[in-house]
Length: 155
Image (tube, rainbow, N blue to C red; front, side, top):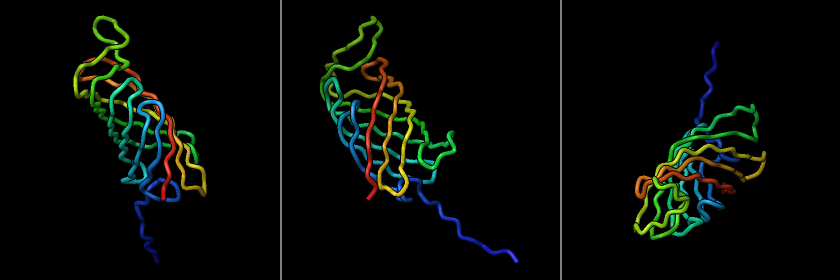
């Protein structure tokens, strides 16, 4: 006789929770939220001050994978979008080879490719993360590197 066992699509956040919030440091410096849609996928939104000026919003869609075969340390990758508001200096290298470009635009838009590692200690409601990846400016045009670390709490 076969027994049927219900299978749930439980999130992979700490203690199986699907929503967390916290702080993000470096680029941007501010707040972060994460919503797990499945055991391997999540949406992330960050808001904060860009290191070189303006307010910045960014949104990422992440795929998580487990190359270490660990319950605690995993990796993730995914595409994202960054939107900056207000004039500021960005770490972009433009066509003239200038390393810092001052933008007079009131809004800047770029796409991101994020790669990261997250640590979710067992029996805690916390997730710590470190991520980096290229930022390709669409307006103004240019290329930069995003780097961040942070911590999220899952209530």
